Length: 69
Ligand SMILES: [Zn+2]
Image 1: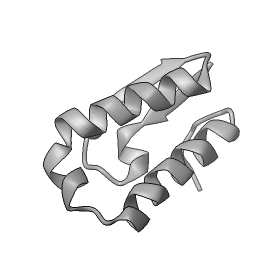
Image 2: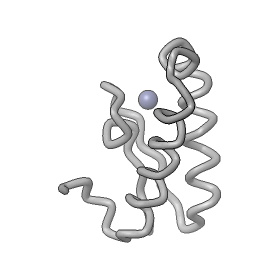
Image 3: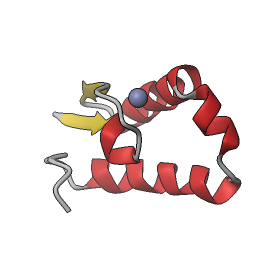
């Protein structure tokens, strides 16, 4: 099973989404960020937004999702 933690993407937040489909998790997390962290997200520049996407892919590709770098 895969896991994505909002905290691992740089937000001070306990939201976690889990599942088996990486695309589904990314969609869930994207929706969460755009809803709950809307203000922070809108202040980010394109580089920061790309970095979040990159981190999501990176965390999901590692499988264990433990978040320890
Ligand atoms: Zn969050």
